Image 1 (cartoon, rainbow, N blue to C red):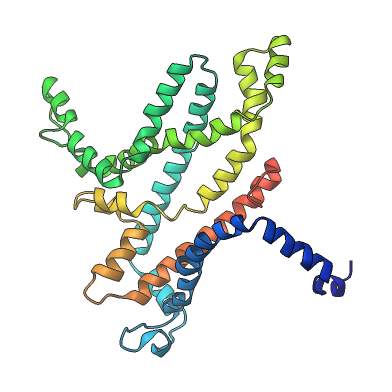
Image 2: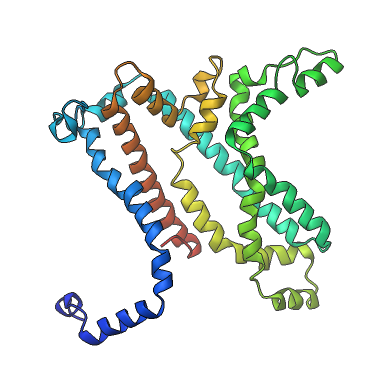
Length: 317
């Protein structure tokens, strides 16, 4: 098909079929109005303000009236003494969470899929995904209570063993482990639901044939269940990699103390403090950092999706 024919507008018959399909399924198109409006208002419209990153923005002059400074805000961030620790802290927390947390929902789903006792399986599912519905503020409050150096659960255990109670929340070496594993505990059950749904679509005849051939339970998991989960796992891995620089702001900010600030200051908290808490309210500088964060995430999604397509023939696109 030539380029001219591809660029030619659709003929009258095609347009008639399109309008007929819309009239027959108008209810579905009406349902799309609200999410599309949300997407336009909160996702696409704010892109106009991204140009603040390239200006010395002042509310008195507005976006268009503020002077254009090009890449000066980006250069300032690269030369800032905060650049290296903030980037390192963000990457360490992100990759730690990804490496430790990505396989656990898969293992949980594979284990629950092998359980024949329906009551036990449903009970484990309910117990594991219930923490997902606890708010971040409550989770952090629970952590401070459980790990309190005087009245917490760990302090009681230490006193019972005549040991010195540890100050976990003030220990920089413990911050990352507490952040990551509490997040895994909170989200693994809910994430496993996706994999359980995929496992339910696998043809039972494959397992029946494998049993007839003498395959063990582990062999059936390896050669039937895992290959069935792989396409979905790859898509979720690509999407998770794109959020490497977007560590949870609320949880990190609430868990920060003066003692662990050296390992807990990440991009999101730094942008918040520079843009909203500093006396000068440097909107341009914070916007530049946020824009850089989004561009890096986009590049990571494209790169990891390419590698996933090459290695497993599965990807987001």
